Image (cartoon, rainbow, N blue to C red; front, side, top):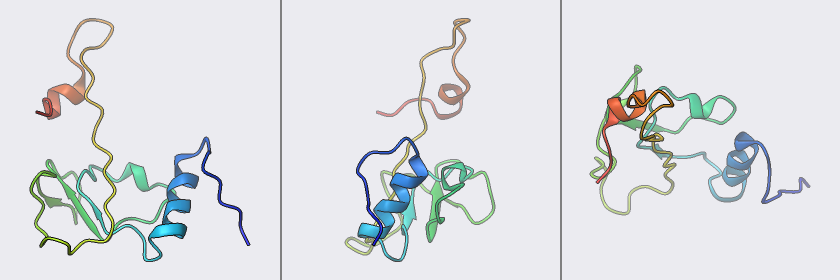
Length: 103
């Protein structure tokens, strides 16, 4: 029996432990998929969505209004992009430039 810890320095270990405990079939939906870098060492979700899709198989959708019926999804991974204010040189960060801000 593997021991599952609640603390780790590895995001992948934590996410894979969440899958073991709560999502035996893996995560179903990621509405902020982007390029999928989040899934380097984690199984990819069944449904990949993003406001600005950057790869094949990623559906364009706003995380505030997903294209699923109510109560039809068992698990969602929500890892929104970091929206920084500005860089050290005072210029807007590329993430802020691309995504604007959340209301």
